[in-house]
Image (cartoon, rainbow, N blue to C red; front, side, top):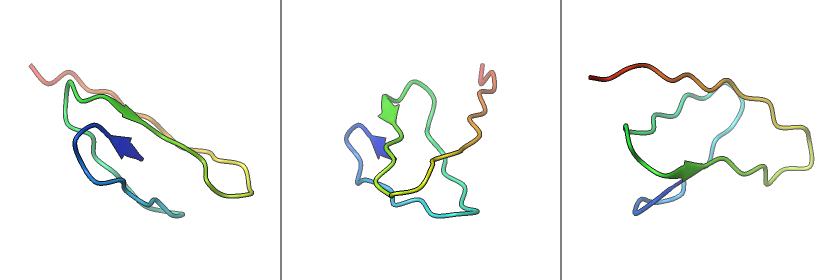
Length: 45
């Protein structure tokens, strides 16, 4: 997971990552298998 102005996070199976509100980010599949993930957005204000 790439988050602007932060180190890249290496995600593996059964991991959870947090992206702060209003932060530009991207999830990139660097493996050979299919990438499947759940993306949850919650109102923070």
